[in-house]
Length: 259
Image (cartoon, rainbow, N blue to C red; front, side):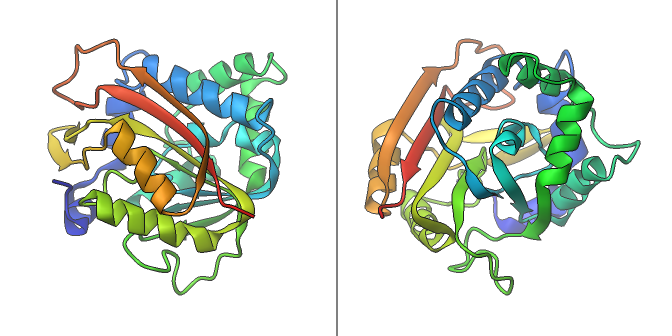
């Protein structure tokens, strides 16, 4: 059972989240998850040929890592999140607030994936320059950005997000179907998250998650009107912190809206 929206508004602490999952040397998602996500995003935006004018990140949270390879091949990036506190935390990094979370360890990793093209500070600046808007989104609305009108984009990315607002597979299908209006014909949908999850913790706060299974997930994407180009599933090897988040598999799906 997913947590209701009000629970997120009241209880989700982005600083606690970043410390739990991404802090240098101890974050639970460092290593397996970040290696997986950054590798497939890098490949998608290079040999995968996904590029264009605008990328829309749906459910950005307080995180930047999912955008580090995208900033090489898109002219504009729009980030968005339901929670005001997440948008504020992202803005802190965007504006170089001294209290912003330090992403240097992950930026270095992406620079290495890209062949050490540039130092981490140049990479960070490139991303900051590409981010043009930080918007509020609501996955459960038919028009998720209403009243703002977002013109259709070349690529919509959603990372570790949709299992949170969607209470069941039917809702997930409706959300993905609503995304159609945000993507240009022939445009790309990139989804990254975990399978078979039921919960995750931020500090000591419990949040439920929609349990998605491989076959069900792929069928939902197809029913919502997309063609799946690539689907990658990697079992979680390190089970030592299943009490913090209980997903057992990572997934990356690249789908396209038909022309």
